[in-house]
Length: 540
Image: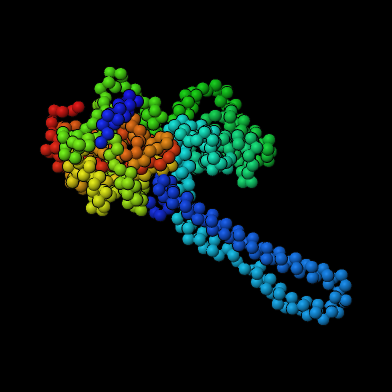
């Protein structure tokens, strides 16, 4: 692929013409808004602190003055009060000035800050959002084979070599991640994150909230649930060294010792394979995704490598779509990403200004992306699709209409029967697990309400670069397409015969670092009769 990109470069040189709260974590666009909300609150908090400091300074000046006066009078009370001015001023102070001081002390300077906080709190993420963000971190951990130390230190692939303080997970953060996993009955990740929390605690990190006893309690139970009795017993003994009176640990100690002695007597080793499979599947007993390992390998860049012979058949070229009037003078840069099925990429398709306009139009409407239930046909959210999306019609803005016309000119397909432009934003751990874009035979009602037939082709425009992760991978053939801002990839979902091409099963890998914006255009069968001829015998 490096040679192909070099080829395009050379040619370029030669030819220079959810509820308001839900799922915040799925969209960097909304997360950016939250960052500015927090920044505004910090500014408001600083104003409040300044007001409190000013108030305390005024009170301090009162205290110093009153201290000097009362000290002077208390040395010789009768002599002091014998002076009529001193007597007058004492009465005046006690009658009026202390009342003024009382009013000053009772003055609440927090009103502005509290009011601002109350207004902004309605936009804050809730417990579900925090849980979702925690699960997203664990999803990245699994997909990219990251250990807890790497994540905790903030040294992610593609990030700067020195992590900032804000990118580092504290011991309490690690503990909270472990608790989220525990609540989800995910003992595999519970163990990993509690172990990391314990490690950071033992390295000297301090906390007023979490202690070693609480961490060891979670650790002993999580490893026990994974069938590791000896380790569970070891953690329990370590806990009891710190707190000999711990009721649950004392009970667990007896139980673990009994189970171990029973296991040794029976000399049962049958669960070794089960433990190995448990670890390999990261605690998932029944994984709904059969090609998970292949999908995650492709996301990590460990996919299929083309033979030199096949790779030699991939080219980059200047493309005018059969001397289309729009491209005769300014042809497109087209690059083959895969040979069969044919997946092509078009470079520099949409301008920076137009992409920003599309994002601007989509942001207010971004909602948790949905999928079509294969049984009911109803649109619903799903854990295997974590992103936010919005739909833009051609009538809504000239830029959307311009992009639609450009897609039609490049692909030669009629876009009048296509779906509206879908804009998607993938935030923390955002992904879309392996799926088909077309409706299969066991989904007879797919797209029926549109009345335009099946999805014949997919156009995917990348509207941002991604620092790490976020590739589009095809699990059946082993292809991986990296996001490149301003470029679009295109493929046919159906053979000319109208049969679905199952090799086009694809996925959006989790975004490890950065912000991923894409827009999709799905063309349908109706209207393509004279643009892509039907061939009942064509299956490849």
